[in-house]
Structure formats: C-alpha cells, structure tokens
Image 1 (spheres, rainbow, N blue to C red):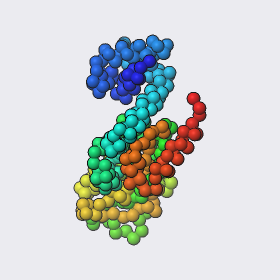
Image 2: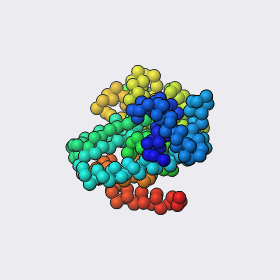
Image 3: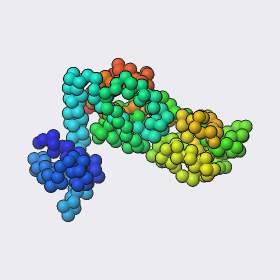
Image 4: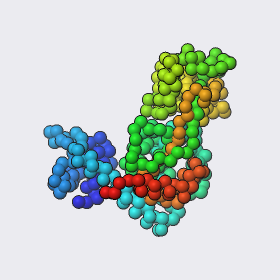
Amino acid sequence: MKLRQLRYVLEVFRQGNHISAAAEILHTSQPGISKQIQLLESELGFEVFLRKRNRVVGLTEPGREVVEIAQRILADVDNLQNIREDFTSKDGGHLTVATTHTQARYILPKVIERFVKRHPIVRLGLRQGNPTQICELVEAGEADIAIGTETTRPFPNLVMLPCFQLSRSVIAKRGHPLLKVKRLTLREIAKYPIITYDPSFSGRWKVMDAFKKEGVEPNVIFGALDADVSKTYVELGLGIAILTTVAVDPKHDMELGARDASHLFEPSTTYISLRSNSYLRKFVFDFIRDFAPQLTPEVVRASLKRDIARRPAP
C-alpha cells in the first residue's frame, strides 16, 4: 500500500468519480490512476469504487471507510510537512482559508491586510463557497481553515470554534415605506417581495424559521449567493433584503437604507473550523487570533486536545 494510491483514491472521489479530472489535477495519466487503484483494491481484498461498464460511479460501503482513513492519513502527512517547515523555514509557508462571500468581503480584508504585513513571505490563498462547501474543503485537506456560519450537515472530523455572532438588518431602497414604519414587524416585512440568502446559508433558515413561528408567509422572490448580489437587486427596486448587518456599508450603499432587525431574527454564529488532528504553524495561530482575539493559541490547542480525547480509540 502506497501513499500515492491513497491520494489517487481521494482525488477521484473529490472529482465526482471522474478519473480523467483527477488525472489532470494530479498531472498524471488516467490509465496510471486506474492501475494503482486496482492494485490497492487487490491488496485490500475488496473494491473501493463501484463500477458500471468500466466507469466509476461511486464508492462501495468499505470504500467510504477507505476514503475517511485516507483523508486522516494524508492529513497527518501534511502535519509532518508542517512540522518540518516550522523548523526549516520558520517565516515562510502557505495558508489557505476557505470562507464565504460575506466574510471575505466585509470582515476579512483588514485581518488579511495585517496578516500580510506581519508575514510577508507566507503564501495566502482564499477559497470561497457556502458554509458547507468551505468545511468540505478543510475536511478534504484542500484548505487549512474555514471561516463561516452554521452548516447544513455535521462535520465530525472538524473542530468548530465559535468566534462571534452576526445580527440581521432589513435593507431597502432609500424612500421605501418600510424604512419609515414606526415599529418594524415580520408582518410589515412580509408585505414586500424579499431577497434573502440561498438555502445553503444559515441566514436563510433563521429568516424562514422566524416567519414560520409567527405564522406569517413571506414573499421570497429568490435567494442570492452573496450580499452584494442581493443589494444590487434591492437598488433596482425589485424587493427588500434581509442580510447580516455587517454587509451594510454606508460609504458604498448610498442608495440603500437599513433597519435593525435583530429583535426579529436569530443571529448566526461565525465559526473557525479546523481538522481535528491539525498541526498548526505559528502564523496560523496569528491569523486565528487576529480574526477572533479570544481564540488564543492556548485556547485553540486545548480545543483540539479535547476533541482528540473524546474520540473513541481505534
């Protein structure tokens, strides 16, 4: 059994069972990947992938276990690389942050600016997606940390550290009647077409739950993938938006007005998510602490140790 074989299995899985796409990513040949996976299956004594007419269509039941183990093994290999870099190249390295549009656009810029000044030779990369997608990137080892709100499914292999809460506001075009009402209520909001987040974001669930509990049927015309898209359509007069308050920028959103709606909708919690067996370099701790000052290296290490302790012995 070779690490290369596990990398091939994992990449085929990541690429939606497309061996050709995995070969392109790994800069190797499709027949080479197929052969190495077959050799691994022969050694294991079972098939990792389901096949139909020589085409990979999914994972077998034991194949799913193989993928989980491969993720852990390759993550540990990455940890060893990080330890080596800590002692041979203390100032350099790379950090990939997976995050959502709201975090990348409205919260992270100042954090990244400070980080780049403090660590000028660290290669910093950003990957964007919805809260579930960014955690999948960390779980798969394609990103070091994820920054986003609640996910649509659990991630037992990740440690999720709460950072802060995001309240909500109602956004409307200047002059809109909703900006002038004395008391903002869900029934008042429901009188107008609503633009909110896509269902893959926790903000959408919390907004819809608030209306449901009140017995009010909102007129949601569509869900946008990011706040800037939502605000664009609000500026066109197509509706109002319910967004996190941090996405309201008075300097740039001069055509829009906002009403605090924190009394109507539950806030979302922003988390930093890490692989449970992560070895974090010093500059990663610096980034985390700059984003959420309460998450000191001691707090993060303690959280990682608690997560390891609660896991059953293999």
